[in-house]
Structures are given as structure tokens and as C-alpha cells.
Amino acid sequence: MSLGSRKKMWTVAFLTAAVMTTASACGGGSGGDGGGSGDKVKIVFSYWGSDARQKLTEQALKKFEEKNPTIDVEGDFSNWDSYYEKLATKVAANDAPDVMSIEIRGLSEYAGRGALADLAGKVPSADLDQQVLSSGQVEGKQYAVPTGVNAFSMLANPSVLEKSKQKLPDDKTWTWDQWINLAKQISAGGGGAMGAEYNPNPAWLQIFAAQRGEKFYDGNKIGLSVDTIKAWWNISQQLIAAKAAPEPAKSAELLTAGPEQSLLATNAGAMGMWWSNQLNALSKASGQELELLRMPREKGAPSAGMFLQPAMYYTASAKSEHSAEAAKLIDFLVNDPDAASILLSDRGLPTNSKVLAAVKDKLPPVDQRTLAFIDEIKGELSPITAPPKGALQMEDILKRNTDEVLFGKTTPDAGAQKFLSEANAAIAG
Image 1 (cartoon, rainbow, N blue to C red):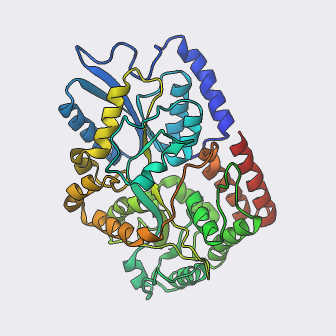
Image 2 (spheres, rainbow, N blue to C red):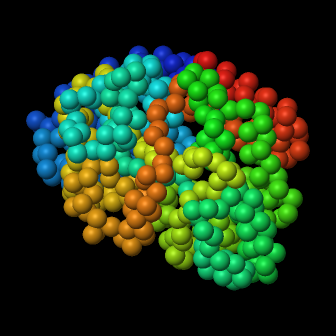
Image 3 (cartoon, rainbow, N blue to C red):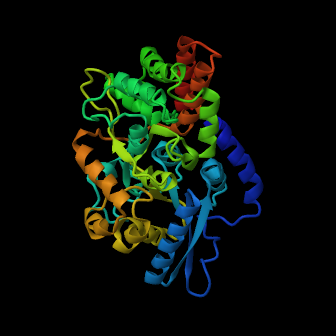
């Protein structure tokens, strides 16, 4: 996702809003007309994703309307690339959707701008995983309820490994050096597949840094050292030099094409890093039974660095004219087995223990394996908290500076210094 600078995004949003406001009704996304037709109240629910997610969401919203005949829900769907620009413009124009999907990187941003309602006491949460629920808090207020959980993990295709005469590693003990060497052996094994592929997600760097005793975010500053950033880049540099991962230009092309066109999904690669809830889509695309693995570790690392993170959150507009109905929709999405039976693991595995128990047997085999994997590693995972404002820009900043290093446009030392400068500026606002 390319958002540009946070300040620029909101500046554009407010300028656009200034034009829109003269023609728009005030209030949160329901048109200000009392909502809907007849005695019905209309609320708007915004979210992003694939066509498959849109179909599942529409089914879930239809079920909610059946159970709540006085409420109409209008789904406001966007693709990922345009979601936050669109949402920022609506929030700036006081026309925010009543219920908004937000990822953890955007939580402090929107809460800090007064855009989100405090949901404490409004959405039942006794049966939700309390540690995961606490990640939806900013300055002690419960602005967000997690949709479900996942973990950033290594995915592997055993069939591709076998063709290259290699076996799945012992993910309880493997190191980054062992992963690099395995990727090299796969690429050189004559099976026609690449050993690994690049993913610019900051979660990878966050895990790597934690293994070295560093935090990605240390309060309102970046906690990474230059040495850690350089060591992290060196992993990709080694893979590229050994032709065990695609050249930077090819990686950029694959990232633009999306997960379903990744090397792993097209059986042209053996290993890649993805969120655990993406196992289903990647498995379907590949037609193979893919395996979830723990991330490799730094040799001697005291911590795995992996963490359990909400796939996304449900939040409510602070300016919604129908806050009770908005809370009722969020309650349905996280606490009703009927919703979970439709959505399954699309937004991560349910965090409501009773709901998960009710739908566990309905989960497809792939999701059953995701659940088993999360259960197996849960004791190794670190708690997660919402990062500071500016985190929405971090993937863009990290990818841009990584590209400059991997394409040879700058040195790792200069690139690391530039990344830290830009990242800290983004947090400062």
C-alpha cells in the first residue's frame, strides 16, 4: 500500500472534505435522514479486501439484518490500496461510516483524531481473549474490538521441497542461516522452483528485531538499531546473490500482483512469509497442502519474537447518529456463532472462546490446521499493543528504503539512517 506521508494524506482529505461538506449531511455515514426506509435505521459498514471477502461479508450482513429487522446495513467495500484514502476523506468530512474496519497500524491515528467511539460497556467482551482485546485500547480507552487473530509466519510447500530433494525443517530450532541455506539448496536442486521470496511487511523486521532484544516501536520513537536493520537487509541480499530469491525488480512485480500470484501460490517457490489467516487463500491458489512454520530465529535468541495480532479491528464512529445500532453490528460480528459460521477465518480465527468452540468443527481442513498451529505456538507469542500515530506509513517507508538498498542505489548504512529518520518523522507527525 502506498499512502505517501501521513500529513499529506490528511491534508488532502481535509481539502477534499471542505468541498464535500457543503453538499453532505452531517453525522456518521447514515445520511442524517433517520436512516433507511420506513421505520428502519440505516448504518454504513466500511471494510477492505478481496472479492471473496466481499461475498462472505455480504452474507454475514444479510444474516444480521434477518436477526435485526429494524436495521439496514450498507456495506462500503474498497480494495486495500484505496481504503485509507477513502476513509480519511469521509472522516474529515464528518461523514464517517458508522462501523469501520481498521488495522492495528491505523488505530492510534484514528483514535487520536477523535474519530472513534469508546466501545467499553457497549459491546459484550467477557468471552473474548482479554489479552488480544487489550490491544484495541489507546490511552486506556477501548476504541476497537478485534475481528480475529493471526500470526506472521513462514509458509512452506512440501511438494516443492520434495521435488528439490529437501525436507521440511525443524521449525522449533532453525535459524536464519539455516533458512538461507535451505533456500539456496532448493533453488539449486533442479526442481525449477525458487527457495524463498521477499515480503516487505514490517512484521518480519519486528520479529527479527525482537530476537535481538530490540523493539520496533519504543514508545513514540523507533527502537531499532542501525546494525539490526542492516543485518535484516543482509538476509535478502544473501538470498538474491545466491539466486535463492527473485531479483528486486521481480519481487516488486510479484508484490504488485498480490498473494495469489506469489511464487508460493503458483508453485514456483518453496517458502514465503505470510499472515497465518492467508493460508487458506494461498493453499487454494496453489492447489497444494501448504504448511505453517515458526519463523527462523537468530542464533541464541532468547525469544521467538513472534506475536499474536488481530487481523483487523471493528471500530465505531464517534460521530455516528446510530451508535447503539453500530455497537449491535460489532457485537454480532464478534460474538454470534451465525456470523462466525459465515466468516470463519477470513478475518482471523475468532477470539471469542464460545464462538470458536461452536464453529470449530465447521472450519475447513486448512483453517483447522491454522487453529492447531496457533494453539501450538500460543505460549511462545509476545503480547501486542497498538503502535503510535504514523504507523500506517511504516510499510511504505520500509519498502522504499529497502528497495534503495537492494537495488544498489544506496549503502546499507545510509539506507538504515534514512529509514530511521523518515520513520521517526512519521511518528512525530
